[in-house]
Length: 328
Ligand SMILES: Nc1nc2c(ncn2[C@@H]2O[C@H](COP(=O)(O)OP(=O)(O)OP(=O)(O)O)[C@@H](O)[C@H]2O)c(=O)[nH]1
Ligand SMILES: [Mg+2]
Ligand SMILES: [Zn+2]
Image (cartoon, rainbow, N blue to C red):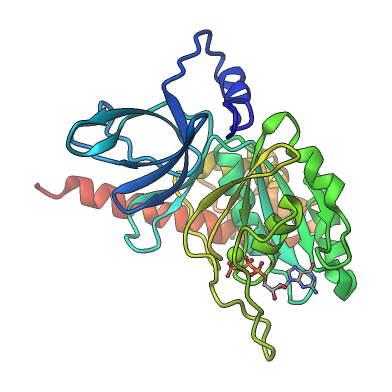
């Protein structure tokens, strides 16, 4: 049995500044189509999620706090999803113009990279934007440190000097304490990264048992095999909650203008001094961003990555505006 505190309830009410404590709640461990596995102090239950009958139309997601009632015919049914203090949202990869909530009530977004394959900074920045958009702390975790720390890691850590970073090896048993610190006070951490980087292995290592299935990566290109297929919450016996997720390659951004500004702070602050309000920082005269590039204060590759993201958001907004203008 687990207590509400172990599920992160105290942390939850602190984060939302809630005064009252209602006990008719549990936390969503896993969502499987219309059925939801909910952890409660009296054990795990499988509840039916019926958005027609639920008070809230919000679909439950791993990490959510929910109220549950018992229906004489259907058994446990989700009554409502409680307010979220954070939600990690990307563009739905299946339906481009819809958001997809990856995890909720998250304190730390852990971006997982591994030492056995190249590291892509543009992909890291996208995940940093997802975290920043939801005002959630992000950390970089380099797994498989037993391969040796790649040279590019130092460059990435240097470039992203505002972001905490950790190196771990589940095989050598190193780097554990840094992650346990992040889980202090029963905080919730979500692991995001490509298939095969060792997310589930890290969960098992911290849990001290094989809870999550793991599988070897392909020898020739180190590609993972998409072993984890659902987002799932795991309680770590020493305290804290981890949400393990299926491997992701690209992430599409959703409503991320502010997140981009946070992650590309040097560019967004220089931008304010451009002569033209709608400056694209490409060919305009009196562009403060281009000036900063010339003076070496902003890296030109970083600016290129920034521009790609801004263009993507602009395109998205245009598509959405066009759709909204269509007669229903
Ligand atoms: N050498 C070494 N191998 C590791 C380490 N951590 C994980 N691996 C291996 O990497 C492979 C993939 O690990 P998983 O934990 O299944 O990776 P994952 O990120 O959960 O992958 P998906 O579920 O597909 O997203 C397995 O063969 C692990 O044994 C480590 O610290 N060192
Ligand atoms: Mg996995
Ligand atoms: Zn400009």
